[in-house]
Amino acid sequence: MAADRIGPGGADRPHRVIVALGSNLGDRQSFLRLAVSEIGVVTAACQMFDTQPVHRSGGARENG
Image (tube, rainbow, N blue to C red):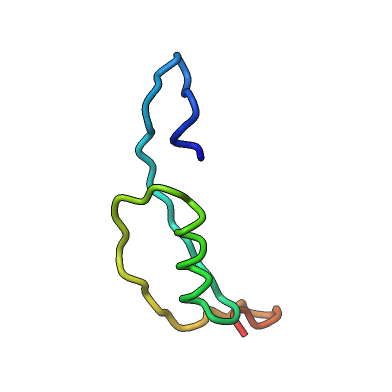
């Protein structure tokens, strides 16, 4: 995992990062849980938010 790699300058320690994930197809919650599990060490996570689809004017409909 990325936390096991040696970073710039030879620092042999994990890096703190913030990651935002999103999903708009299928079982969204399961896909997000899978994505978080694939990251590796996760020390904190916020709740999931379900929002309404956003439509583009003059284009194909998104999220569905």
